[in-house]
Image (tube, rainbow over all chains, first blue to last red; front, side, top):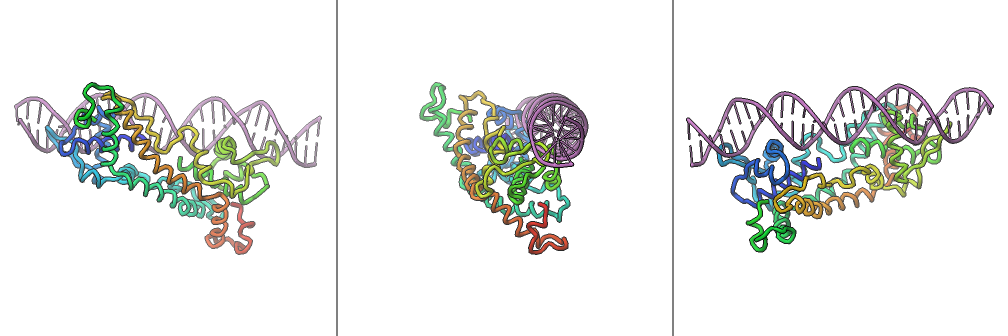
Length: 159
Length: 159
DNA sequence: TATATTTGCAACCAAATTAGTTACACTTAT
DNA sequence: ATAAGTGTAACTAATTTGGTTGCAAATATA
């Protein structure tokens, strides 16, 4: 799930940056270092999760579905979880004999590990896409050797 | 990593239960619902992590390397991480053009997501194998319809 | 000492996941 | 009309992972 999450946040940060203007999958793919179709696939997931909306036709592309400070990294995390809902989904362990120990173990693990996942989710919920975009913008000028990348770095750089 | 973690904790809880007596990979596999070789593979990882030790030869098997209340689920989690150290390892994203934006994005994500992983690790560190085994033992009698599974359930049940 | 038990390990197979890619239908601005 | 884009299906290749077999080495026990 690693790269999906990374590319998704990359996309959302980009969309937050170019607020209001639809961005094409080709541009996003170029920035994220992947293929436009991969972006569109991921975009479908983000759209189903209600994080972005897309416009068909020429001049179309993707936009944030709501303000960037109303999208948390937990939203992104959950959107990427479609198939398997839990980080510690222990459901895959087969229920075996021995008095259903497998089932008891499964439930016990789920209960005990729930607190761990809860902690991580709270931490993710505390980070917004707006924060990410802002942090990114503040880091770009210093980190980049491009000429003219000083004050207007945020507008100069095509994320 | 899901099932690896689940099987590993299953194994450790079992070993905590049968304290001092080496347990063979066949018994563990039977309990965890997998193949003895899978258990031995996993056991190698746990052994490298210093969580268990094994005895060769007839009557051999695995034992906890230290007291069960000195083994946290964070230890297990980290042991299962060998190849890829980070839950949010963003390193796989290719560094692309555009003023090394990929690299900046990577570092920014790592920094922001570090807090999330830290929170999860602290929660995992707060749970010991001893707690897991105890919780498991307390749940087994009630959950199981085996005859004779009442007071001495902990000794009756072969985890 | 001989035998049975058990780990350690390598090799291989099958299934699942995933990124990348191509192709094409459909939508929409110009 | 045409060009630009999305949505989606299909295929490939790589990676991961669990299961399985086979065998050498170690060790308790008779």
